[in-house]
Length: 118
Image (cartoon, rainbow, N blue to C red; front, side):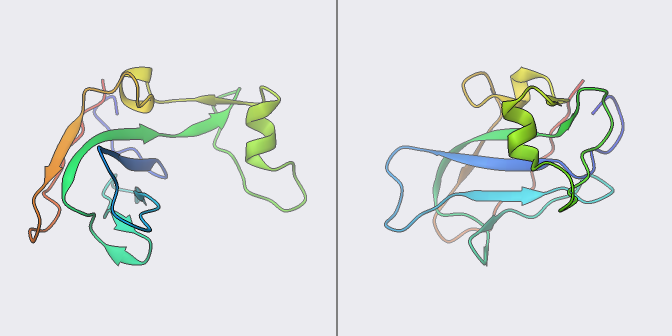
């Protein structure tokens, strides 16, 4: 994002169409270099289909990273109370607005996906 790797972001593949039985979703967390490997449950990869790609990274309203500390308020509760903000533009972080897509063909590995966020 902005020419730098986006660490600790959530990458979600949102399946378009009918999901397979027991499908719960495909997602990943980026590492310090912004790399990720999509997982579906405990399995690497994702079922065949067309996906919208969504990237999200929540921060405190001050822009600082959220700290998941058991002594502090839960991040989901913080979001509900306006204590967090999305640091990734809506064109990438909102599934209804994202134009990033990937198609996975049955029997093939998840292709390399490069997401460039201005």
